[in-house]
Length: 286
Image 1: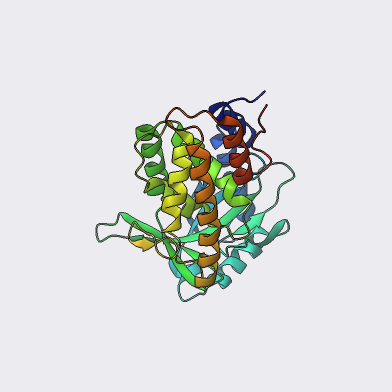
Image 2 (image 1 turned 135 degrees about the horizontal axis):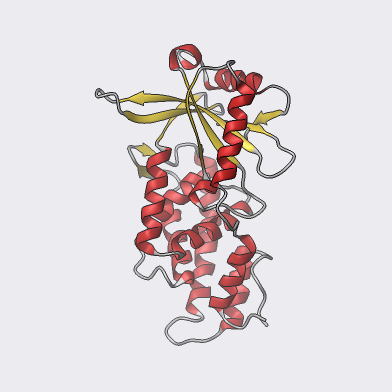
């Protein structure tokens, strides 16, 4: 039985959370991909990335991303992203699915969870030979995207350490909200919004959710992070549609939070509003 907002959030989190540490499975999938490709491509390095190794994955809605760092001269130089993705798909052979909707990976289907999104990349080095960043494809725009996956993982770990367990909990809740929208934003974009939030009390889940919407509302047409615009993949029209969704949810989230703030105890109405925001996986009152 659910009588209070904190307990409702706990139940909601338990229903959407992917529990456990799946990094060993991620490495097993990565090694399988490498064996599958064999010598078809000159792979300089490979590693899992994404929400599973970062512990921000949703139950039943998480695939594994595997970065394949390709030899630039042999496989990437003077090639469009669509060509490189096609080459990777050919190297994977039968079982390789279509290019992911975001145009950045080839999906490899498995009989058991998780499927793998294979992301080709090239590395860019500094003058001293250290890695500056990686470039990954965006077939939809035929452009190469600058990314620093290892740095982002460290930033998420540091934020969870500094802000407490509720940081990752709220990130997962926002991913569940985002998943249900007509216009979704990329998982990385969503996590960067959380990283850039300035919230005093991270233990007040409702307030943190509201503050995520506040930050997100101004982070759709431009969001600068690690020397790049994280929101650049969104067209002007889609950014406006996403902003409309977020503004509506922000206003509802404030009302839901207000119902139990400063000694008020209208948990019934607050839970009703939170459920209208997050959907049927959020429990009902009583």
